[in-house]
Image 1 (tube, helix red, strand yellow):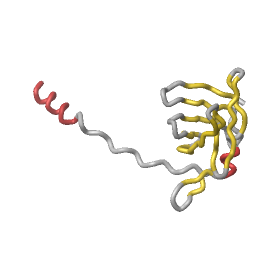
Image 2 (cartoon, rainbow, N blue to C red):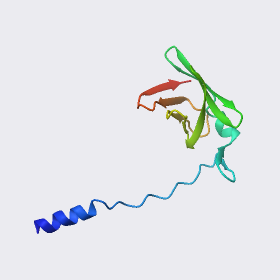
Image 3 (cartoon, rainbow, N blue to C red):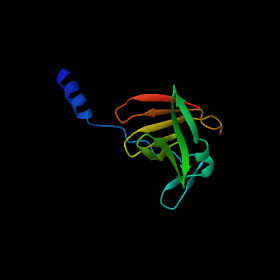
Length: 120
């Protein structure tokens, strides 16, 4: 009996449930022919100055995208989910919004896992 259970457990170890289907795009995202592009109204929710102590970061619109003014220069942000953006360096930007109101906070999570909270 013990050998059977070990053999069965070993054979099932490589089995995994299938990935869930992708969730629908939030209604604020306009579906284009090739890519989902955020609408101007959605981007406007994130624009503004956010503070952490004496430090300030500015999130602004630029063309059809969102940018953050960093010490090394402006950095383009890419929408990957509701209230969630990433940059080319692997940093994540998680905005806190409620019921269509402008964001009140942003958590910037570095590619190395460090997290800093910024508030308006």
